[in-house]
Image (cartoon, rainbow, N blue to C red):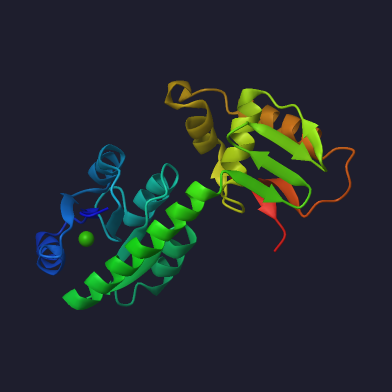
Amino acid sequence: MSHPTILCIEDEEAACQQVRGALGKEGFELRFAASGAEGVEEARRLRPDLILLDLVLPEVGGLEVCRRIRGEMNVPIIMLTVKGEEVDRVVGLEIGADDYIAKPYSPRELVARVRAMLRRSALIKEAAERQKTLSFPGLEIDLPTRTVKADGESVHLTPKEFDLLYHLASQPRHVFSREQILEQVWGYQTRGGDLRTVDTHIKRLRKKLQEGRGDHPWSMATVWGVGYKFDVAP
Ligand code: CA
């Protein structure tokens, strides 16, 4: 990552200039998107190393952009807020922004935050590469061999059941909507597909992994009105 790509989603030219001024000479590849919709498209196309996301955007607002991007990729997101937008800041962090920076900020502050975030995300990526086996008490999910053991016994899963389990368990406690699961586990071609497919697969996973076994600190949890998560007791 010698020249990390940074995507800045910001509708105001003056604010873009500020970002350019602060980060332009720091060896980053800077890309800009002037609306939320364009930002989501650019994020998909560029797969940037980091996203700077303005909170107040016309049409598709920053929070919605954050939610959409977060549903598709793990890129670190720094929200650009204005002092006083405290409530939105909290919501932003809840829906998956990694950090926020309040305008007006100093160029030095922005550079420091960006560098810190890139370092952190590089460490997380490294750890994820090493961790191809997910282990929880009474449950092991091995990606290279695509095998699952519950209480030490092999559990036979269909390919999609395995993909679904790995997808959820690789981000414990992260809530995925059924739409996201359908897109991410089944692929885009089933967009508009039947959301009940997700429900039936979850049901079967629960049956195979949980039923008839002792208590475990993890579960395939339903988040009412939203979707599912692989829950693990702290
Ligand atoms: Ca704005």
